[in-house]
Length: 112
Image 1 (cartoon, rainbow, N blue to C red):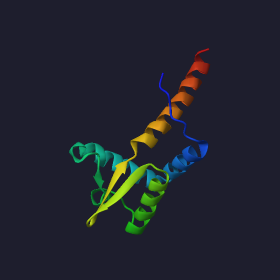
Image 2: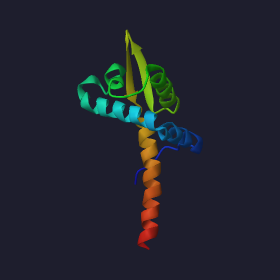
Image 3: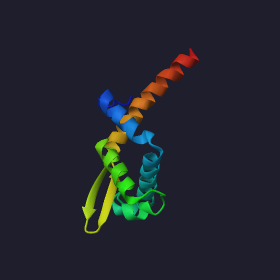
Image 4: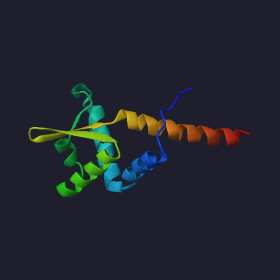
């Protein structure tokens, strides 16, 4: 049995709200894809590489990055002229564990 660290409902709601915006979700998924493709870079994603894939202006992207960071879904770091983002695996694991438990409970009720 997997034990999930306690994530309070306010934090979970903040994560869900951050991902509820379609542009923000698209940006987050691009960061995930870029991070997966660059396994040699310690799980980092240069945002300049991601921005070209999206049809969103720089100020809007900056706002979305701030919201994702405030929800603890990503961390960002400036390196010279570049901004690097990393997925916060701890937050993702906590959300997956909570949703997995909810899904498991629903499946048990259906099979009874």
